[in-house]
Length: 69
Image 1 (cartoon, rainbow, N blue to C red):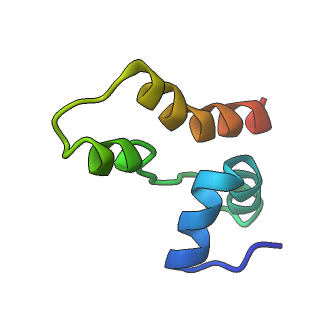
Image 2: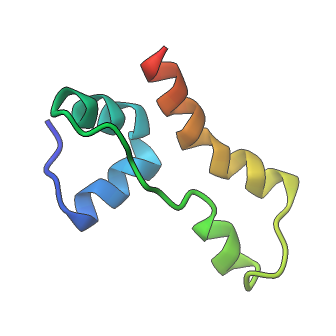
Image 3: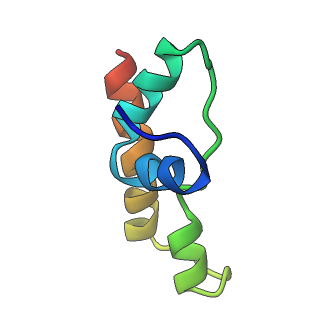
């Protein structure tokens, strides 16, 4: 379904994380490395992360957890 590669997987890890995780598992890849808090780090100069930033960063992780349940 998703094209794999650095740009496509990076987009998918933020906007379709559950689908990406399911596809990788189906292909025998048991792990996914992602950086869900990069947006907050860039926005805040890497010096501060708010609770809203935490919630935003947790969204793709929760999507993966729901997809694997």
